[in-house]
Length: 41
Image 1 (cartoon, rainbow, N blue to C red):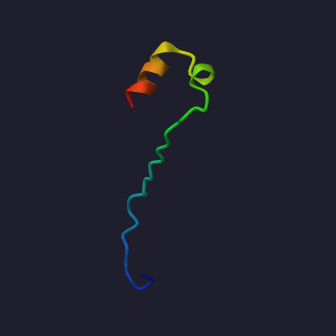
Image 2: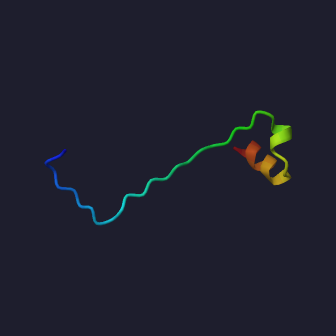
């Protein structure tokens, strides 16, 4: 790997995706739309 030539013209972009799973849905999800989207997953 050290001997390979790698182009460094464009920066690398990483995406971080995380899902949120609340412990108590009644307390942590307050808005109606949030509840709907949570249950649709």
